[in-house]
View 1: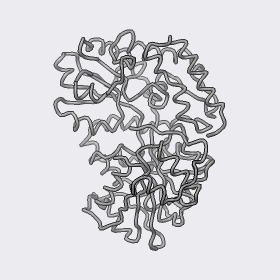
View 2: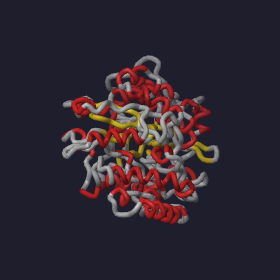
View 3: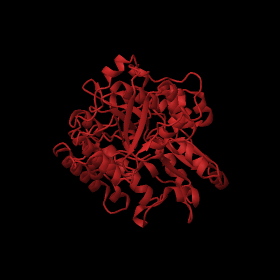
View 4: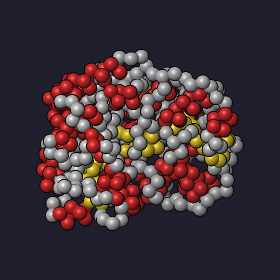
Amino acid sequence: MSLARSAPATLAPAHTRRRVLVRLGGAAATLGGAAGMACAAPGGEPAPAAPTGRRADLRVHVVKKTDVSDWIEQGLQQNIDDWKTKHPNLNVTLELHGTWTDTYFPQVIAISASGQLGDLVWYPPRHRSHIAWGTKYGIVRDLNPIAKAAKYDMGQFYKGATEQNTAEGKQYWLSYISEPIVPLMAYNKTKVQQLGLGLPKDDWTFDDLAEWAKRGTTATTFGYYRGDSGAAPFASGPYLRQWGVEPVDATGKKATFLDTREAFVQALTYRHNLMNVWKVSPNPRDGAINQGDLFGKEQRLLAAEVWPFRIQLYPKDYTEFETDFVLTPTVKKGERRRSMLNEHVFGITTASKTPEEAFAFLSWISGKEMNVQGLAQAFKGPIARPDVWADPRIADKWPTYKKLRPVMEGIEPDYVVANFRGEEFDRAASWARLERGEVPVLEAANEIQRLSQEVLAKDPA
């Protein structure tokens, strides 16, 4: 799962829509052709019908990405849940803006400034950065009045996701991908059994993991790598929360790493020791770490922390051995498992002349069947809908989702960076130098607190 970037501080120079598309080599994909083969199962959640029955050409701003543009294109081609059949007068055009936010954000904001924005926009939030597009920039509108008029139940998503997409009673975004951040450890079950180590367990503590990793580390094999959880407070958010550390206060204006100094130091010490004392993990000091190669191609890594989408991908990509998954450890055995929400979301623009029709499309891509099929076909990650997590087609095909379901039911929203400088905050709060052994733990803890507070003190982005 990719991470989001915070909103740019200034508006890029305005571009006309034509100039943006020419610069992208005509990358916009028009998907309003003949309906493809239906792939819907009975009982799917239908999107609200377009209230007026009028024709509408919906423009959707997205990135070129398997789980975003590619899956939406597939959904339209497959006519999932008969959406195209039910909405024959709605034509959807996906306008692509590169592959990630470094191109997407400047282009969409420039198009908005030029008055040529389409009907829906995608956003991958980090620390509530997406709320700026509803409040500061005025790019997206409150969905609640549209949903009410369409008699659409906004309560069909988990509370944590609704809270994350809402500010001052206005919900600006609807979930498209919503998942616990790095809640799992993938391991090479075949090799672990060959080595006689004993299989990892869901109730392990961090101490249990360290002892196991020590036994599994040899001259040619690493026992464990923190992997997808990274060296910054976004992907490692659940890890920090498990230790009782919250990076910022409720206002999002004060860095609070040192409010729980002892716990923060313990969390940093554990990560430092994995790479520099116990040496059970590859160290970035020795060069770039390719987790996929180490785990799959070379089989030199026994276990690594992973995003949920790897539940579908690892068994498909690595067929020479059996991959299995366990929940990430806790500090103490049996304690409450902490979590944090990662999302990709869509909103309806304030520029849209047909917001009701745009909502019909939005509620479809955020609906049950579109997301059950997205998981079943291994195109995308899960969504914050209880009916998707409970669907037997998912649990039967991917049993690991059964053990993740209680984590999702108790999901906590991402914390707030009030000035919307979420990515900048994460860079400042990185402990990569600590992992490389370049700075002592106590010095790193103090440095992270100081640099993080400097970011929070800046003017809003």
